[in-house]
Image (tube, rainbow over all chains, first blue to last red; front, side, top):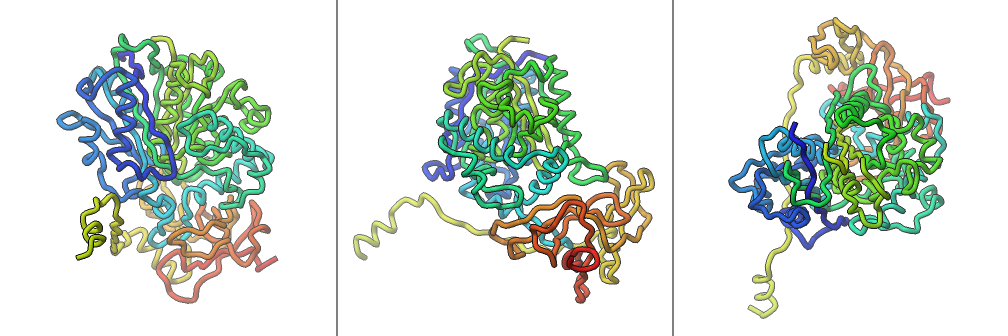
Length: 377
Length: 158
């Protein structure tokens, strides 16, 4: 494979509502920032790879068609990726493969969501024919899985509160983060209302408008600090089958293991990771699923996942601070790249050389991961 | 025409709402139609995979693990065990049930994959993992799994 690097990264300010921009304006904002960071223009780009969550969320079908002009893609190959909430991650992987395969030299990849023009809760609560009306948004789907984890791992309640606080403290260091809650306390999380018991309000992600873009290239000669893509992986599994372990999905385990193997690294070599954590309890769950810690909740409890800890998780504040759904996965991948480029500003992990980006989607069915490093493979 | 009307007419449009609506009729395929006919008889009938022998309820025409057709029909019980659950307390647009309500993954006796359903006749805070529950049927002949109105603690409310 041809060595591939991230040579430009751009993201929007994430907010509950961005009425100041249209959808094309939103994606263009991120794309222009990524191009500027790379010292390139649209004319230098060979192909565009776009990701967003299901079309039903905004009611715009095949938005890649109407976004082509805003992304400088007219007359160029454009590729749309669909993998539900993991789509930002899978999109980055597809973009990396466009380059590492030798098909293209420079690829622009973009992911976005404009949740203010949609109602994802409604879209995720549609009754299915012939079944009882039990759908209740993403929280309704994941709350039973979280309860099963808490029961199985014998985890104390405060673990979910700790992650909720930690990610908001990290996010307060990131000016792009939507939620800015620098003074949040465990007591506030504990006292916030139960939405989907056992999930409390402050243990959930916000609903955001936002976009992120990256330029991937086989030519990093013009970039003083490229993030090299060392390993990528995507894996999936069906929503329902007998014996499925949704607390610790096999597809997630395989995705992590495959990514480590391709990168030639072991989990203990990572300097930090950006994991897709839309509900606080998913941090300890994914720590175990990806083999980062044997006991996820004990790692959280010991402070290992804070900035300054053994393996900082979501130094950017993660999905718990910003959730433009389609972009949320790519933000994890881009933030991992920022860390190894040394451009993460106030949420930089000192001396980070190896970082992981991770995303999941659907009913914990779709997984994507990459490992980026500061050294050319 | 007054000046204000004129301004109103020429002000640039920056945003508008365009609600759309889709009405459609779903026709059940053969395997689901069998399942629904059994529901009309107040029976829960799943199907067994000929390879892995797992039983799915509602039945699956093709085993999700083995990718082979499932023909053998298997009568399942009307009771089961709560695998896990949540209590939905959040109101949202389009919600059919009145919160709070218990949404559970229930492993019906004689089947191998959990079914999502409602648990009733019990305070949400008293529901536990591993609790035994039984189906409460609607008297109306509804061709839907919602004909089981909800599951309640086995033997009635404790």
